[in-house]
Length: 112
Length: 110
Image 1 (cartoon, one colour):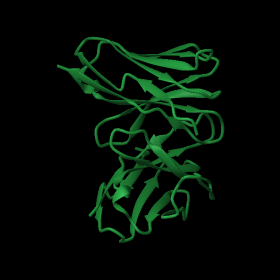
Image 2: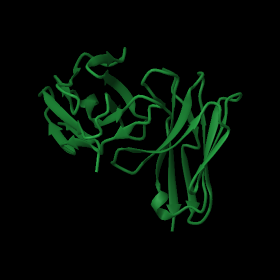
Image 3: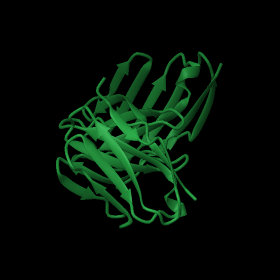
């Protein structure tokens, strides 16, 4: 089945130690998104790619970076994780049209 | 971006009862969508209603949209324990971004 896959499902890192989360998709969608979701809150968009064009939200901290080497893969890099970055990180995809988004299962990040 | 507001924040009902959740927004929209999120998982798209539509059905789901009041409601009929989840409305005004509401946490008691 076509899907969005996030690895790992759970990630533990140390304060200040760089971490990379990955997302892959078999839907061949041209738009990919990264969201941060904290407990009992709405998903917050960090950035999205339209094809190779990167679009950063104005309030996304510089600590968060992203790479999209090809259509199928997208990475979220957190350069120096702080305790406040502990959250669920969700990857999603969509294609031209009505912007229905397809989500991965998420990566829960813990920062010690 | 303007976040949507949902109410109630939490809802607890007995299995078999109907559940109604409401969403309000502030901008003009192209469509409004509802998503479900099971605990610790990603979001799953449930239903989309376009700005020129007033009501839409999908199985046990009924969505209404009132663009004059900038509000939408999601009705789940004959609820089941498996419907226990958080429900988010999301709306887009163009481009490729969605703004999500704060969510309603639904608990269906067997």
